[in-house]
Length: 470
Image (cartoon, rainbow, N blue to C red; front, side, top):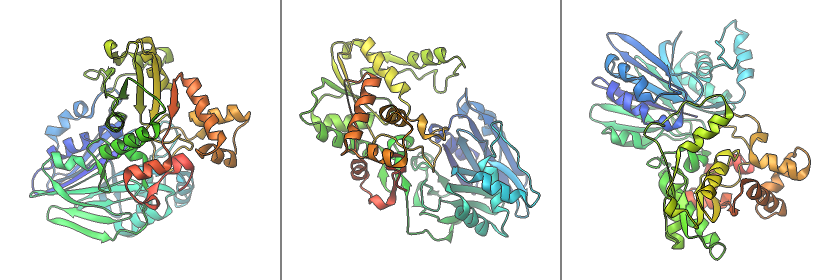
């Protein structure tokens, strides 16, 4: 995953750029960068590896040494960006968020024109570099951006820093957001909506699907009007999004709270735990909603130690990796011993972390550990956003369980049966996961529950990772 931030100002913009980019640290863990433009000095850029150190630590020097009235910044899980590019469009910096599924096909087509690309360590092409190459196929930025949105299979939102302003282009189907903020000195664009508010900006507008604008210190000009069709990622509310963020006017915290209430209503008369708790941080709002709806006390039976572990070094030895994961958890024993706990987490992907948490609670004296999730079983690896580096559905715990139950790798029709909560196959899968993970009980919400929790029409939401429907 990745998140980006852009700013244009009548004054130096580096303070806002530094903190605006830093506010996207929850969306990436490996690479980060900032690029600025100054009328006198031109472009300047800095990139750092942030795997073992927070963004602010790595970019402290640049926060005081860089100068410019316009800039873009990005934090990413995989690729280094922003990238500085020189082409027939002139020099510009570019940052992207999304996923390009047909990268090999596009690269092969561009290379026919005797172009070249730099491979990353894993042999892949940096998708931001590829996006720039696509844009450069056309005569101007507007045509280039529209061409990129048209030919990319996946999703693509873009920020482009030029001497004339910052171009902002939201994904064609709005799978990821871009929100614009305004203050007296200028404008900013960000992935997360809360960012500009803490930097003194007020809400200006949220770009619609496929909308392209250019920001200058004097204003925001719409270059391409938004489309009517939208498929925004529902998993952003469940997992990616920071609690203070809102997408399409629906706050992350409220959606999670609503989902917790729905889980409680469906659990009425089914389980009788002593306390309700959430796995920090994305499970907390779910747990509060559940507790308030059910009347069962909300509590924090364990906490994560974060002062020196914001992004801890993980050794290659798997045994030590597991030990470090457990070392972050601190039990509050008098809230656990001989208690029946109902614990809510956002999702189960592979299952490793939640099983370790459950075993940790049992080892700390819990009598029962009932698990509720903030979304349905994940059945498909996302085609549109990089929430997991894996490209294989078989890495998901659901697919492994289905294969075990069926005695073979499942075909599409079989997976569809297991995705339907009204079937016996679904019930068998959930029970098998519960057994494998040592849960006392396990229940998921349905896709319909999530749609109700967001309050948006189902046709505007992407639910592919749960039911394969685009």
